[in-house]
Image 1 (cartoon, rainbow, N blue to C red):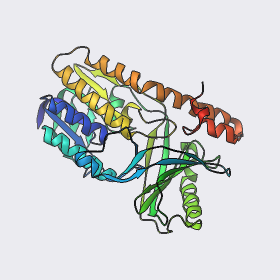
Image 2 (image 1 turned 120 degrees about the horizontal axis):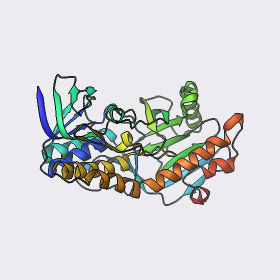
Image 3 (image 1 turned 60 degrees about the horizontal axis):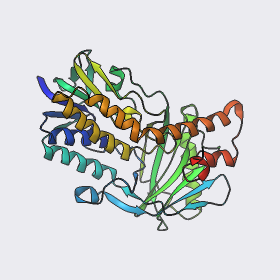
Image 4 (image 1 turned 180 degrees about the vertical axis):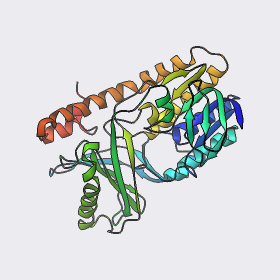
Length: 355
């Protein structure tokens, strides 16, 4: 079946669902698809969001599992450093995604799960696994770090980190995100994020060290178990990729079809922290607004979208990318970065924010 719509969206995570809601609210005919069977599952996320993202009202508030008050950073074997306040929320990510999808459906978007993209043609037509083809005035790629839509316009995330995370019962109540910086975790960091009665324990590392990732997470889990902070049993296991190369070109064309990228597809995750939920929601809303404007004939909508992304998110992404590259340079040729270099590469320290 061939469908002609105003806006076609690939991916229904926070970016895609937010885009679908905004475009549908503007009166667009919106079809959004996702390869997963249901919103947010499997969870591939540490589930922390900063306080600046609005989850305080309505259905989104029901996805908050715990409030976070501070960040505790462990650098090698040094005494921990506490940054307080550092407000945020730990989410039930599946519930969060489902609430965003429900908003999009309520706004009038058609949201289909269990559907994959077979091809994106040179004219922008999207061929789907269920036999449909979508012809849209605007296609939004919100399909993650290895975006099929992004590849179609030549915007590809080339720098990625690999993550692995286990969930275990939390033995001691905790209201801080714990960060572990060490040369034993190359190209990334370890974490313990409390979520009510459980905690997410994981690490992200450079791809060339992927063979060590399982043992790195297991060792972190073991040490936290021996210190009495978490239980030994693993309740859940997940992992995934995070783009860490900064923003890619977020717009392009395929024939007469405008293409916009949002969220991880646009490289909007922070290259140091890996955080991407807030930027996904923000960019998704902007992309939905821009798509609606473009579908209505606004020739400047795509450029305005790119300008807004680069203006609001660009400086923070550029700083993080610079710090990531500094730390990588310090690790070159077998060198071992000192604790001062590790601190300069992390957001909790003044050195990170220095010129």
